[in-house]
Length: 258
Length: 353
Ligand SMILES: Nc1ncnc2c1ncn2[C@@H]1O[C@H](COP(=O)(O)OP(=O)(O)OP(=O)(O)O)[C@@H](O)[C@H]1O
Ligand SMILES: [Mg+2]
Image (tube, rainbow over all chains, first blue to last red; front, side, top):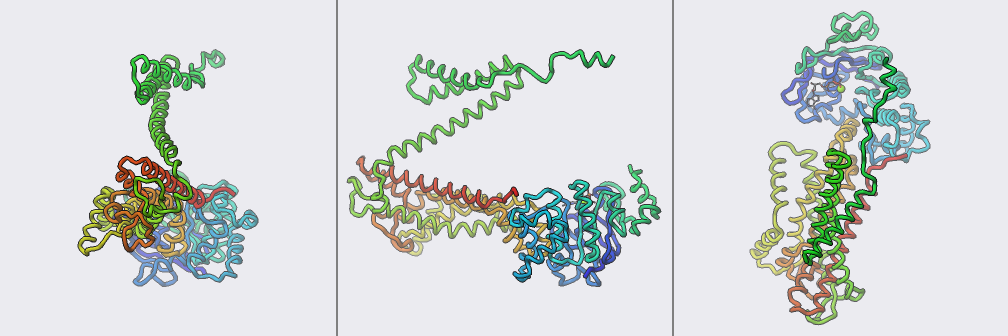
């Protein structure tokens, strides 16, 4: 189910601005890979190139290859819509659909894709909400609007919505940055469970979080403001946090930056 | 030593002298009294004059008194508030008096008979007759115009907001801007010139076409604004679920903005419901009932009002009918507005548990 991602020579632009340059890495299936790095170094941009969301921004352009189990996402004849069904995404700010109930939010992916059986729908919704650790809190109010939940609950609702369509890979862009420590812990636990089924990539500014949840960690950096961001190194999380091979990584992790 | 500094408090720097709560009312009452006094003394007869004097006195008085007691900054604040109130009254007074005079003159002949009968063979100078034919014509023409303009307008707005990039979008925006400025008589003449080319007689649908031309840019503009209000994050959330763009627009963007779009369309309808000029040119007017908008002259409410007024030769009965028809037209527009508000509230994104 989970799939491997193989990136080689990836460069992404916003119009004429080169945001990231020449990034190559491998993301192992059934593992958690964390992206860390200073603000503006292109973590979100890189993440969004992995499910072809980058081109949604006007002027967004990508060069290079992203292989999802040997199939190039940027190859000829590849439908970005199908790519996004395989590679799901959770955003930094919770964004439930305001016109839909909690149930409809989770069912949205299936319903909007038009590929579902009516009888299975409530099972899928229950399974996804349980998978996102939200079921107990909302099972009595599935028909209430999703925007009536707390921020942490909304974020877990968004995770439930993303896993309901059974993607192969789940991309998370700072999913806990707006949450309290308890919700954060709930989501970290959830990530630990989800990695048995999905390949997970998570962007975070929280070093401890990266150390806690990830198997491998990638450090991004940029030479100067306005320069494109680059991948400095990617390695086992333990090594990155104990004995990184590049000095810049150690400086960043120990807070000796700037 | 530092303790001494803390205990040795001076007068609070956070509190200042302030006018009592009732002071604006007192100043307003004083200005009105003074305004009345001045105009009585000067022998001014118009109520507009004393009201303007009172408004001016209110703003000036507020500033002077507040500056004396509270200081300059608070005085400016109070003057801004006073200006807003005066502007509000200036806007509301004509509106209320307009509605009031329409109602008081309109109810004279407005009854069930009036709403359910046409003029038939009643001469313009005689009492009797009704506006059924005009209501019917108005409803048909406006409905047809809406059926044409609303979908085109909404689709154009969707194109501009969701797809439009580059030259074509700029050109469309430009033409919409130009269309917004078209005077209604010009839209009427445009359709009329086409009608004359084909040697056609006036009929209701021709009027609808002209009304649609007037309505379309309004719908485009308001829908555009509503679509822009939908946060980009919702579009991205949907796209990231693997939903195609057109379905995202249909199932996420449009439902989120439906209330606003409907309100915009309703307001556009209200605007064209009162158009007289193109109807006069293209629909011609008819004192008999003609339920077929595709053949033969029809009547419409604004046109009826104009004709009753213009052809009455001073007859009281025709005046009364014109006022009653005006009242009906205002009621129609009011009902539309209320419906729009209802829909907007009903369809607004829900919050709460
Ligand atoms: N929509 C956009 N249009 C133009 N430039 C953009 C856009 N989004 C990001 N950029 C630029 O791309 C570069 C990388 O931005 P990105 O958002 O990927 O950084 P990030 O590493 O995610 O930062 P943060 O940690 O603050 O989220 C920045 O220089 C930014 O200015
Ligand atoms: Mg980011």
